[in-house]
Image 1 (tube, rainbow, N blue to C red):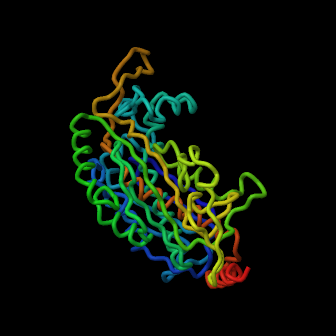
Image 2 (image 1 turned 90 degrees about the vertical axis):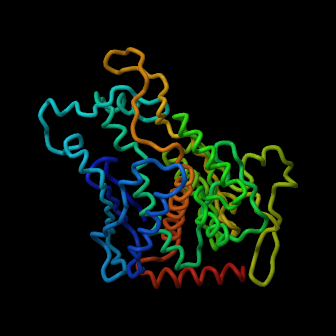
Image 3 (image 1 turned 120 degrees about the horizontal axis):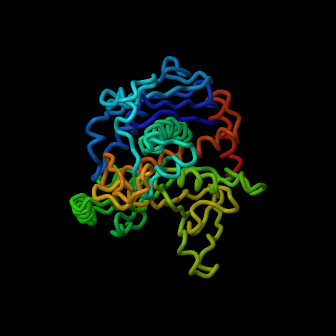
Length: 387
């Protein structure tokens, strides 16, 4: 399975094409729209979310509610396009209109300046329109398709916020993945511990009032994943590495860890390795410090991956920058933005991880048709129990 996304933040629409889905897989537009709606929620979102009401249109690859095996095209309309028709016109416009909303003062921490240098743009809007986090709309739409595939195979994905602006969530012991999913969905800041929710909301309000932004940490947990996805034989076939790359590819993400993550550096090996057990259901582990991976492969334990999101670089009290025309110091440009998007980013991370897992499953198992895939996965699970 592979995919491409296209579209600008204020262009007419966003598009994704997915190739490699099995034929005959049930695909629900309502489920995709549900994920898109989740992405748009979360305390701290800005005015853009009041304009956009993301709904997907499927224009190829699906008939009568099931995939055909041919490429699937997903389209989401940008409602704000009507306010940008001249600025973002595909056709040539008069010279006086070419400077409308031109950006010449790059924002520190954004792609503006380096993107302009790389692609020789004298209007940095050409950079920020594509580097905008609006692109994650299609990452979520694709992930929603992947989630539907995974759910039919007994795999469940949940995401939540573990830290926001320095406020850390104390995770309750022994929460199931379904409970994580339910608790985070019920929270405006997507936390499983309601005792910290108000403190986070207060911090977001204060940050917004100060014209600033805050980041945080999100966690994705995946259950029901069979052992043996990925491989140790080449560096680029290690599944945890693929997931790490995908998570860091989300806008503003700057780091990733699995299981106990960076805390493992301070522990002896005897406190780190997950001891192997066996019962009538097959192999399991006494702990899950390694986050469901050994040697770049899933080991049958839940996948636990966390990503850190930096504060959004667009500040309403902008930092110093330089005008690319005059080279004089100026305050950076201001685009419409959020004080934080960490709660929404947990939804994006869920769907990005789901996409990587779906792709890996389709690579490992025979999957021209969905029936064929389900049978192959069921046979493999039975093999694992008896190994």
